[in-house]
Amino acid sequence: MDDYQKVADLVKEKGYVVAFTGAGISVDSGIPAFRGGQGLWEKYDPMEYAHIRAFSNNPEKVWVMLREMSQVILDSSPSPAHLALSELQRKGYLKAVITQNVDGLHHIAGNSNVIEYHGNHRWLICMSCSKRTPLSPEIVSVQPYPRCEKCNSALKPDVVFFGEGIPMLEVIRANDEANKCKVMFIIGTSGVVYPAAEIPYTSKSNGATIVEINPENTPFTSSISDYFFKGTASDVLPKILEKL
Ligand code: APR
Ligand code: ZN
Image (tube, rainbow, N blue to C red):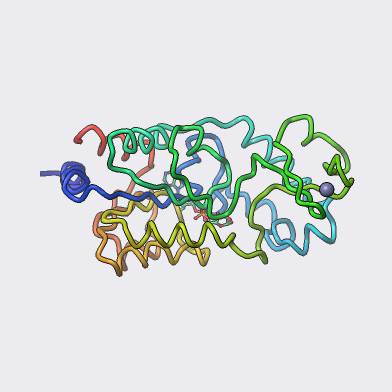
């Protein structure tokens, strides 16, 4: 029996599946990952462009990178892997998605219990009055950077910058799901950013079976992954669903 069938049987037997996703699941949606090859952090130093101090000191400079990222996100749509996770929820197996991604594509693909650990770039938030504004090509084009229509302060994407904490509600929800899950899919993440990368270890320590999908090995692969599919999410996930 091949591993696709083994994992499908495991999903049917165990029933409570949680997906932990990273930028790799959105590569097939046209959104480059952050690390490796053409990663965003090869072009923009994250400490200069994705740290909250850098944004507060020079929003105009950081919006150069944010404008590029916003356009890519606005142009993106769910990959076959996003759609496979939505199907896995419809079949009653997938109970939650914990994502590090800020592209909002799990929601658009139809998943409902999505924990956006690093926030959502499709909303902008005011640095002073916290008023939220939906992302749009019009607001992104405002020079030198988008401002709040209420108090005229700088707007930033409602995402967690380096140097910021994870929203407490997301931490609580993610820990709850990590403790409850019986099977965790780790999909398209390099597993190097904490505290997010702690989540699969929590599931493993609670007895979950870990199924990892990534073209490359990661720190999870040799430590906690029970199944490792060396490949892309859009290729591997639909093959597992075919066996359900
Ligand atoms: N399918 C599955 N995995 C893929 C694919 C693909 N098509 N293409 C690339 N990958 C893998 C890469 O091998 C890599 O392990 O996806 C991973 C992407 O890693 P990163 O770019 O580091 O993204 P991620 O792990 O999500 O980063 C975590 O870091 O910069 C911060 O806040 C940002 O949420 C992000 C966090
Ligand atoms: Zn404001």
